[in-house]
Length: 140
Image (cartoon, rainbow, N blue to C red; front, side, top):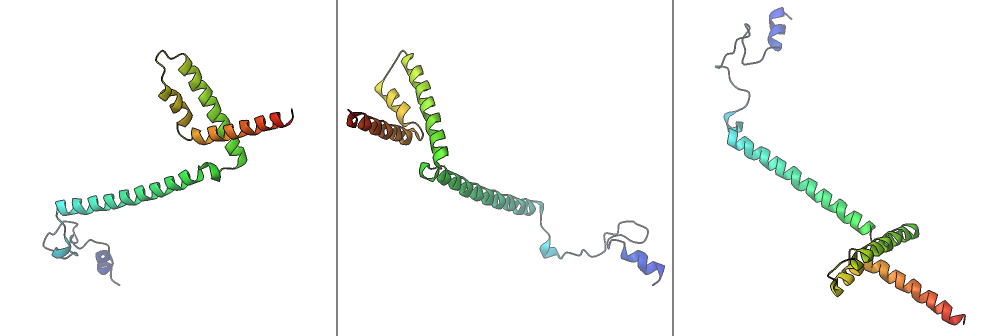
């Protein structure tokens, strides 16, 4: 190999040996593959929308899986008792705020019982109280 051919391998097609730009050389890409700036922006926007759509679908799948796992019948007993005790503490705090409230309504009381997943834990509390009262009446 001569030194001339070796140096030509490392030069860009649009530059000559003196490293000056020669616009007359043919472009590697054909004209049909060249994009205008607006077409390029459209392509990039479509790529971003595709990524965004994919990420939102994955996030929705993850959230539904988390929601299913948080359902009370999928919880362990330890987690169920922990959630129940936190719910009862929150309810007691809201009842204390309700007592000091000047305008009281029955709807506010019902909202304290049914907010979020509290209705399930209120039902569990009523079942436990019923069983306790059953044992009290049986032992008399």
